[in-house]
Image (tube, rainbow, N blue to C red; front, side):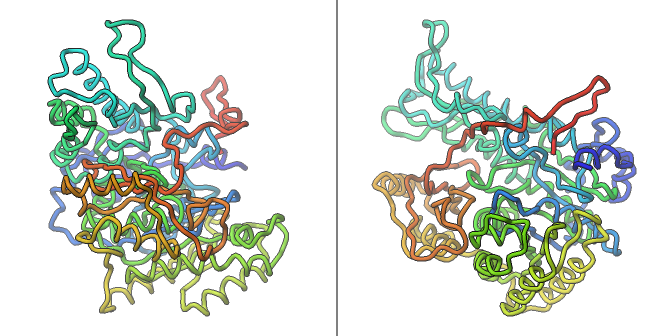
Length: 556
């Protein structure tokens, strides 16, 4: 059966039953149909003095076309924890319609480790992404309205940095001219669109700790400059309250369930190669108050998602991760070893690719957090290949567990649960605890160089003239003490997508620095990362269908 067929045959509990499992009453949530609910933020206030549960971060080796199954392991691990007597909630990102209809298809796990209702979550869900799009585009509309009605802020039409957004892959919107057709249609100017998950509103949404904090952060967004070079903020337009009002319901975390009826929060979804790649702080904190163990994930590999989780989200949310799980697969490691026939046993190519896993293990240990490697098993994997990974991890002193959660659900995660619980116990007794990779009071260049050299393995960093000028400008405006969010390819540890494995002796080039003042970080652009993806030659949209009875097929 396909993933969607498995999901459609699942026996779902009513969301009221799932809510009751984690101590919620009817007054704590609003139902969206039978199987989805939004949980009120009052729950956090009521439990603010309650001790947090343990936080488990799931990440992965460098992504490959075959996939690694990070979301599947995240879901499977929380199912396994609950199955073996540990009260657990998963906290995940919301899927974007761009990848769903582009190349990825569904994004709720796979096999017997999925979040349901799968179709709803992958499509419009509870409308959060549409609310974020509307909030973002309200700012855009008000900027152009201000220009049309006298421009009292003296906005420089040629220096407006705020784009529009839509939650769809649409390359035709990367470069557009707006305001055409005469005075009644506004002032003509060149602009562009981002995909919604690349919006600064999305980043703020996921880093806000309350509605008041959300509104304050929105007000601090820099949307452009006046003709004297002064930064202009959303609060100068006096609309931060209206923008926040559009997010009144969206800001509440979404409660759903796994195939085994264990609770899951799915909330927010910034891309990790553009933004910080983590679900909302609010959802993570709520899960920590309502369970003993929280399993969450960060987008793409450890060099992007996990680094940003640990240096941005955990720092801003005052989170203390207890263990990091790195997901690896036999076929992905063989890909990094240069193999093309990934379903045929090849221990030699696998061993060559293990250097990628090695680097990610080294990186995560720099944060003083124990690491467990999860081998996400596929039916084509051989015993010799599994043994090779185990032996390699043992040589590195890294715990490793075979994961069969795709095939067996929670039952297939028993070894992983044992290793994770043991790692958490050791972390509790350790003298060294989680600490970010760099201090915020370092210069912008120093922080970028630390990430590039320590995490990516670069031996040098090149800053273009534009990047240096950007750094100078943001330093003058006192934005130099913010954390760094690097935007680069997810396909390699380097900024060159063709360099697989563990690249050596390479240079990272920083082309420009962008300011996300509302979100509270600087974006260092390494390479040409497009914030409006395009569709492939054969998009997933061609495979997705619906019948007369409303049954959807082809989502995965």
